[in-house]
Image (tube, rainbow, N blue to C red; front, side):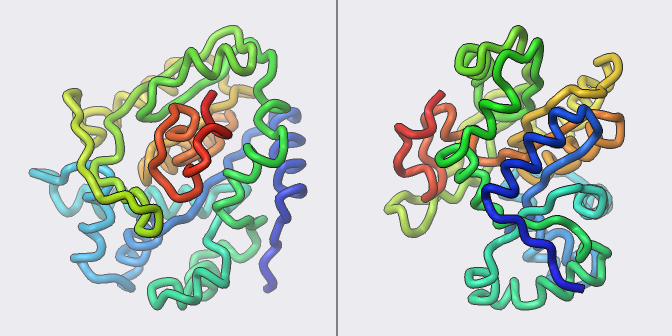
Length: 266
């Protein structure tokens, strides 16, 4: 079955039209971390790769292995449920051995029928299209889950009545891009860990809102963010996995795509 690729204009139209329909949907992006943990669930990756991917999102410390496996299964289910799936472009993907079986992995897990896009196009939607303006301008309310305190910025930029915000621990071990001249670093965080302390709190926070129909959630929360997006979708809401775009909105250069940071700051 051939993959159904969306060009950036088609992707923008899809997001705008589905948001306006008020029907539940989610847009997720499938990156290195998610690929590593999902492959482990299917016994296609080593335990060391599995732990390495999780450790980029939050410190593991005393978290039982079985809990991590359960989280991985939940992430995989989120991808199986999503309406839009972003993956690396194939020129990039097949240049790396770990991505060489991507199409087979998608087929084996029932995801070949998804509408697909290149996950870097989330930056294109911001830079080259007014996608976010179309879906956020003059909303009565919007919802945000992520590690950057951008609620007020979103409110002012898009004239949103209320932005409900849930702040989380920043990505624990962030790769700032090997081609950008920036190094790896561990970002200090004084609050509770993303997992396990905040994980259930986020799901409860989502559940506390009455009737999610037509409610739009912007999520930039690493691998667990995919689970939150799916939780919103399964309860009738809409979710966009915006990833590191929230760093750009906060004025932080954490990916090579964000080097021209002036184009991203809210």
